[in-house]
Length: 300
Image (cartoon, rainbow, N blue to C red; front, side, top):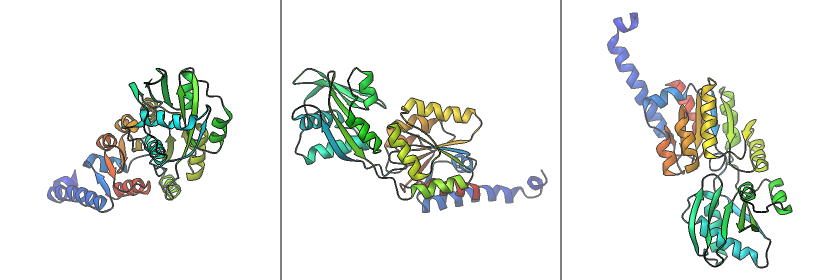
């Protein structure tokens, strides 16, 4: 009360000046802050939920192997997978499309395309009339496709992301992909932990892949097989427990969770909907930018 009475003009000038300097410094470092509230709240975060693909990893997976279970099944599987993945901006879809194109394969003809968020996609093959599914092995198994195969277990043990291709009740092939962990992710996680922030990784990927990435970057708390709605629910639960919670993501699947966080961060190379849902956009695709934003908020 004494300060406000004695020097109202100084306080009235100091507060917006600090905010302008803070947002300006952020912009210089590739941290685009949507509003003053985000700048203020970021410094109070006690928990940070992060996506895996494109956040901790480079988000540029490449196909490392295709195992087919039918004669001449590999080209057929890639043609079907390319048909269901065309038009998608997801890094895994882009990797499969690139691999098929490199082999001179064109997408097969399909009808009745349906996207199943967090699981995959399905359609009707124009030539066979069978339901074709491309997605996680767990989803195909739940739809009656027999996916129990040594190749699936072997790829999982090696930490690969696995995409299964099914036609009717048959498993046509499994596609293995690998996505490199960003070189800066481990240091960024260590910085965040040192700042008193608990880092939790949520991913829709397989358990073995999630475990490998978590170990590589030093994350102790993680969950695999998490669908987009479950990510949003996890953020809500963290907030309900009293933690001031941030969320970092880059994909369409991350948008619901980003919208639920106290402060949300979108990687600049991410989808438009993720950037639109976020309070802070990071031009650099580097988790260190999140640590920079939090420390900048505290300084401001």
